Image 1 (cartoon, rainbow, N blue to C red):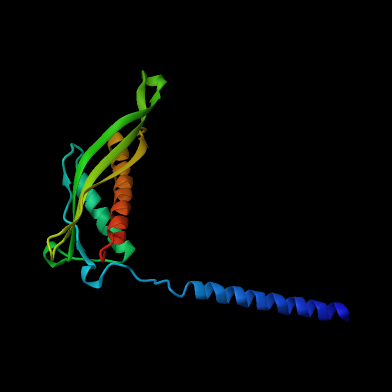
Image 2: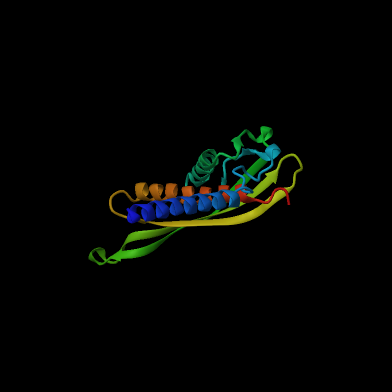
Length: 181
């Protein structure tokens, strides 16, 4: 009989401890906001097609498409046309290089894997004030691809992966920019 009383006291004490811990956790989160720090009047964005200054075809439209997708996925901004947006993301693809990363000795040192690197410079413009918020910030992404099969298709798949990574970097910076400061 004594053990059941002790068990009940232990169980009761653990419940009180859990409730106290939960209360402290909730109180600690009381000042946290689940909303964006981007002012409401700046939550529309336009992304014109990125200029491509490289010899790699289709990089400008590909990166632009992924930046738009990332803005949609992230959800803070509404996408608008250039004339209807508060902000505009202007980008230029300034570098695209493909360098051998591994070789196949069976084919006379022919490359079996390439490292593909793309760099973009991006500006963020407040369309209402004309103020440049980010000025030619450089973003770089890289990946590798194998040369088995169709090399052009493999490079195009790699370009999609790079465009996704560039888009994440760009949208993260636009979302985290200290607009009110």
